[in-house]
Image 1 (cartoon, one colour):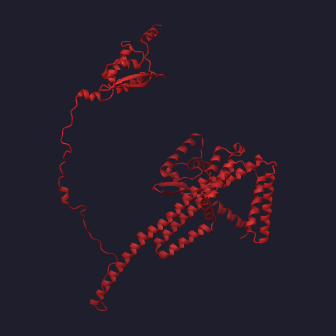
Image 2 (image 1 turned 135 degrees about the vertical axis):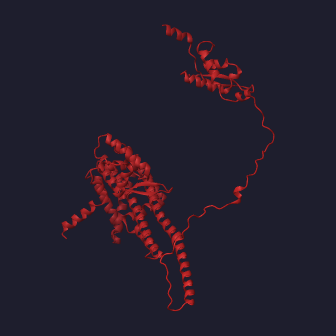
Image 3 (image 1 turned 45 degrees about the vertical axis):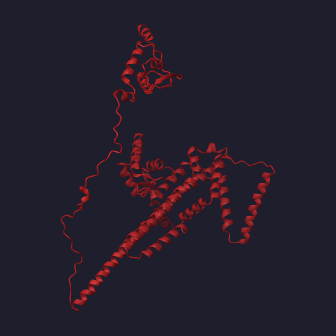
Length: 496
C-alpha cells in the first residue's frame, strides 16, 4: 500500500469514529446545543424521563426560532437514536434509577466545538514560551545523561535565584501583557475542558471489561479463576498502559496530596484575582476555572463507581451463581453415579436401559397457594377501656367559645361600621366596641380576613386590640392599623 493510500485509510477510520459522525451531519449544531444545555460541563447523569422531556422542549423552542434541521420523533425515540450513534449511554445510578450520560465521543465533540468557539491566536509569545518551558522541563526529567541533567538543574536554579534576588532588591516587576494573559487562559481552559472526556474513556473501558467478563462467565469455556485473573491483569494494564489510565492515576495521586490540591486552588484564585482577568474571562469561564478541583473529584468518583460495579458484579456472579450451581451439579452427578452402580450390581454386562434425554413434566392442574390456619378463625380480644370514667360533657356555648372566628356576626358589625351605624375610625376601635363574646383573640383574625376581602389597606403604624378570652382573662395585641372609610365622604364624592 502506498503512503497516500495508507493515509487515506487512516483518515477514513477517523471519520468513522462516533465523534466525527456526530459533527459530520446536518443536525450537528442542534444536537451539540442540546447536549451542552442538558448536561453542562460536568456531564452529570440525567434521569431518562427528564431528558426525554428536555429534548422535546428544546426542539420545540428551536423550531419556533426558525431552525429547520430539527430531529423528528419523540424525546425517547431521539435519545434511542443517539444511543445507537454511541453519543449517549444509559445506565443505573446508585439508587437503581435509569440515567443518561454522554459518552467520551460526545464529550470530545463538545470540547472541539467549545475550542473553536473561543477566540484564539495562532501564534503568540505565551505559546512559544510554553513550548520552550515544556521541552526544557521534559528534557530535564528524561535526559539519560547524569551530567546533562545536573547542568540543566543548575541553570534553572541559577535563573530562579537571579530572579528572586532581583525582586528582593526592589527591581520593577514585569507585568504580563493582555495578549499573554488571553493566550494563557485559553490554553488553561482547553486543558481543563478535556478532563471530562478523559474520565469518560476510563469509565467506558471499565464498562467494556465488565461486559466481556460477564460474557466469559456465561460462555463457561474457561474456569472462573482464569477469568478473574484476566480481569485483574486488564484492570492493572488499563491504569498503567493507556493514556487515560495514567491520567486517572495522576489525578488520583493529586487528590490524595492535600498540599497539591491546596496549591492548585491558591494558584487558580490568584489567576482569577488578576487585574486583567475581569476583561478576559466571562462568568462561565470563571465558574469553569473555579470548579476545576470539583470537576476532577466528580470524574474520579464516576470512574471508581464503575470499577466498584465491575468488582461487585464479579463477586455476586461468583458467590451466588457459580458456587450454588457447582454444588448442585456435583450432588446430582454423585446421585447418578450411585444409582448407576446399584443398577450395574443387579444386572448383567449386556443389559440396557432407556434413559430419556429430558425429565418428564408433572401435570398438575392446580397447587394450593395457602393452607388452612386455625389462627385465622380466632376472634380478636375485646378492647377494654383504659379509663372507665365518662368524658366530661361540654355545652354548645363552651364548644363555640373554643372554636374559630364568628364570621357571620363580625361581617354584620363591619358592614354597620362602614354604613356609619357603629362609630369606629379603624378596625381596632370597632373591635374594642364589640361585646366580650366577639372579642376573643381568634376574632382578630376574622376581622382582618374580612377587611382584606373588602380591600381595606393597613398602615405601618400599630394599634392595640384588647381581646377577652373565654375564661375572662384579657390580653392586648399590637396589629397594623386598618382605617375604615368615612361614609359621609363617600356620599359627598358620589353626589359631586
